[in-house]
View 1: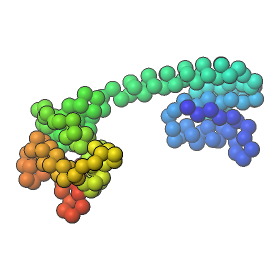
View 2 (view 1 turned 30 degrees about the vertical axis):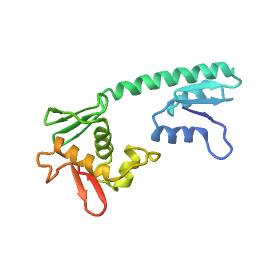
View 3 (view 1 turned 90 degrees about the vertical axis):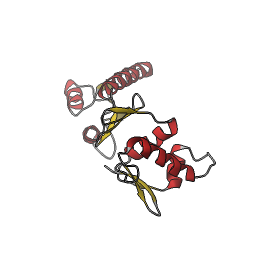
View 4 (view 1 turned 180 degrees about the horizontal axis):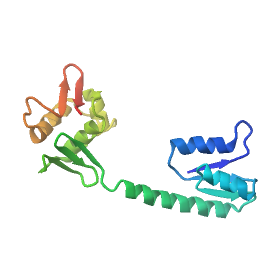
Length: 181
C-alpha cells in the first residue's frame, strides 16, 4: 500500500504517482488538501486507486486501506491460482507440491522437493553445496553439506531419463549444481 500527498516540496506528487504506477501494481491512495473535482480526476487518471481530501478521519483512512488491501489480495490471488514451473517435460506444481515428468507423477521427499523447487526457481544459476544446504535446510542447521550430493543423486534417479547424463540438474565440477532451462 502506498499513501502519497500531492503537495510535496521537491517533486510534483502526480509525477510520483505516475512513476509508481508504472513500476508497481499495489494499492495507491492520494491524500491531499486539493479538493477540487479536477484534482481528484487527475489523481485517479494518473493511476491512484483512491483520493482522500484533508482533513479526514484517521478511521476513514484505515477503513479505505483495509478495503483496498483486501481487494488487492483477492485479485492477486485470482491471477496466481496455479503456479507451475515447467521445463522440457518436467512440471513442478507449487500449489499442490506435486511433480510430474512427461505427465507421470513423481514422488519426492519433502527435502528433495524443496531442493528441486529451489534449483528450478533459479534456472541457469550455479549454487555451491553450502549455498544449497543453507537455502534448503537453513543456516541454523548443522550438518554435512555432502547430504546435498546425496539428495541430488536421489532426485536425478526420479526425474532424469539418464541419471548419469542429467538433463535438468547439472553438476558444475568443483563448484556445485545448476538447473538447466
